[in-house]
Length: 278
Image (cartoon, rainbow, N blue to C red; front, top):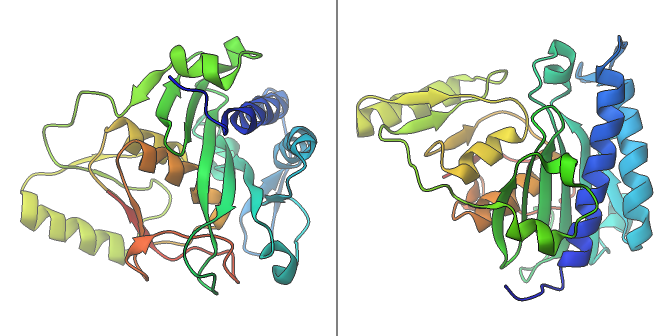
């Protein structure tokens, strides 16, 4: 395997993800209070602590950080960035509050892409990590490098991304589901999702379903545990960017249903369009 110029930044993303995971688990181990944002989504002390821990690591790279829990950067400023970090310090706060373990730290390295910049985006993810602190699993990928799953991930902190590739499993896994399998969100079902499922039932007959909280759904897709993941519900850019590069490098595509092309980022509004991973 050749040394990738993205390895040093992947090192930083992994270090930041583990730091965020540690901060989250410190709160998870005790009782905690839940606040609610204006959109009624929950916010905990774990979100804030993870944000601070991640930002402290990523700031050493000299690249800007755009985080769900960070300061809101003006559109004019952030759309001038060539490269930046896009971070969700605690993806799946609802799962965290329910204590079901299905939450993750998401960190993506974004870069201005070769398409014309516009209100629907200017950048794409070129590296990313999705870390589950409870499962101790790390999904990671970089452009041209492939996608990987590292188990017992935080147990082996301090090793380089180059070394971690050698001790991780390349995705997708060889086993594929024998029945057409749909990955449907546990918390976000909609009439459009139900219509999509009905259409697939006509095409494939019997269907299987699997579900998982947070961005860990992208990990399941990258593994090959499901054939399609439809998302007809709101998400934000930091919810999907890391998962997108992991799925892309595993041979899947995350398609924006408005543009019918791979999702792009750094839009005027940071809300994603509906999408499908397949």
